[in-house]
Length: 473
Image 1 (cartoon, rainbow, N blue to C red):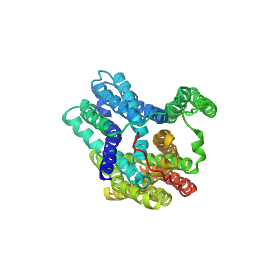
Image 2: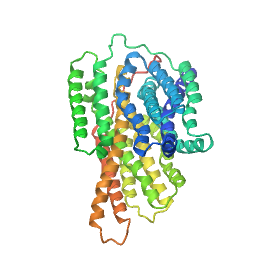
Image 3: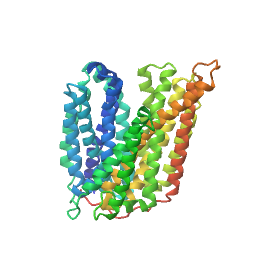
Image 4: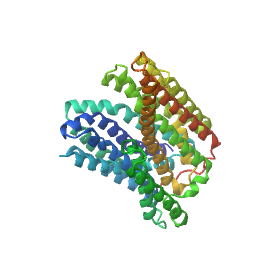
């Protein structure tokens, strides 16, 4: 039994390395955006594609990778993802022009997606039912650590070794992680009778990438412009054809029957809403801090209060969900997030760093309470032979929520800011329009988290599977 425990924690460590690499690299790269603009003599719009290419490719492939993991085996896909991510990181660090860097970032995202899509599936099929929540909590910690330390590491590498080091640091981490994962993650028999649904994967990719591009660039293109309408038209058509195809094919990429399970459907909806609200806050808060006189270094330090709190709360909430179930914990977490966002909306231009930090920590408590129990409920509601696609759906909801959150945050804030600029022409407070628009945006995010809480409550108590996981993977 002790040896078995050692093996499953070795497997968990291998998964955590992969889960850490993507968020760490992503948050570190954001620090270097102004440097990329100077080094490559590129405008802000062009440089933004360094992040946009990564996000679009990652979000659009997660669903496909989830099913692919079910078919060929989670270990094989995880290892390929880590290898591709490491090789692409080397290409990023050697980029001679901005276009090459953008392309390499897309390859990086393709590798990160392979690891991200099957990480929860590996954990769920490794740990027994009564330990899944705790293990998924540690996975949430890895993501939180990456997000928390990424800006600091990125800034240090940028100042001491140059922008290339932000990418090249992934090479020794990736090689070590690859060798460790290859050694400890057991093989899983692939579903030899299943045929990978290439047509479904292509339709799903077209649907997601056009939808996410529309959401991300709709404001810039014009929401009702010819290009925007073309994007949404292609996305809607691909989605309809995808649904028809998935219902008819023998081995669908996405088994639509999964959504007939109330826990699975409402848990994924909760995840989408939670990350939408979260990224409204993540996107707008640095602008608030900058507008109230905090330096970039101070902004980075204050913002780490949120992921650092998640780091401590997520494992605890995971363990509690193993004992008491996920329903109350995840619902309470969403409610705490809503309270924190409401309190963020009451901040003014005279707020101190402490005023912001304790609100961000409260949001981190709510997020930590929500994530691990909700993920555990979703993964436990899916059959063993659909763990990969369940994992992929959950990861897709998370990333789509991020994109929607940034789009809503920027779009709704701009809309309300313009309204208040016109309504407050005689205001004696110059920044009054800014803070009122920010307040409205935080209140909108709080409302979205209330919807998240309701979606979480709708699912009822989870009917966890009682069978013990096999050690084949």
